[in-house]
Image 1 (cartoon, rainbow, N blue to C red):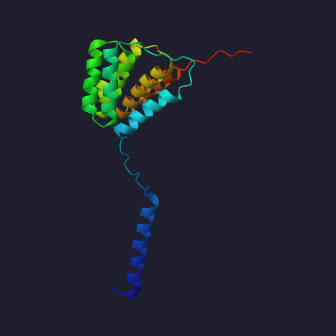
Image 2 (image 1 turned 90 degrees about the horizontal axis):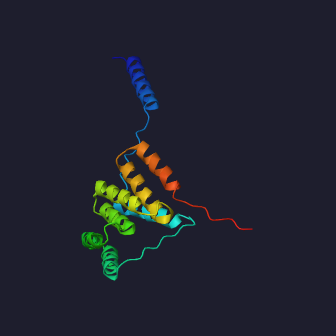
Image 3 (image 1 turned 45 degrees about the horizontal axis):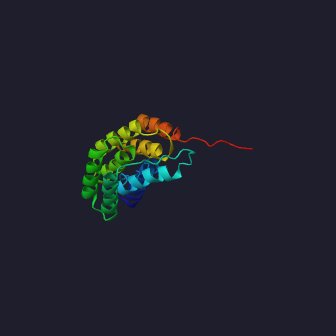
Length: 173
C-alpha cells in the first residue's frame, strides 16, 4: 500500500470517528433514587415550611404520649424497627391519631416499606384536619411515594393537594 493510500485511508477513518463522536449525545449519568433519610427530611420540611394559619395540637392519653416519646428516642438513635414497634403500640391505643399515623408512615419509609408508608399517610389525612402542617406532611409523603413509583400523574395530584393544605390568615386592618 502506498503512502498516499495509507494517508487517505487514515484521514477517512479519522473523519468517520469524528463524525460519530459529533452525532452521539453523551449519556446522562444514571440517577440513584433518594435515600430514605432524604425522603423523610423532605416530608418533615414540608410540614415546617407550611405557613398555614391553622395549627392542630392533639390531646392524648399519657400512656400513648409515653409510647410516642419512646419512639422518638429510638428513631433519634437510629433504631427504626424499635421506633416502629412503639408507634404500632401507640396506634393500638389510638388507632385514628393522625399525627401518630404520619409518624409511623415516616418510619415505614426509613424501613423501606414504601407501599405501607403511603397507606399510612392517606389514613392520617383521612382522620386528620386536612389543613396545616400535618396535611402538608401527608401529601408530601404521598408525593414522594408517587415519585418512587414513577407515577407523574399521581405526583402532580399530590403536589396540588399539598398546596391546598395551606390556609391564609385573616388580614386585619
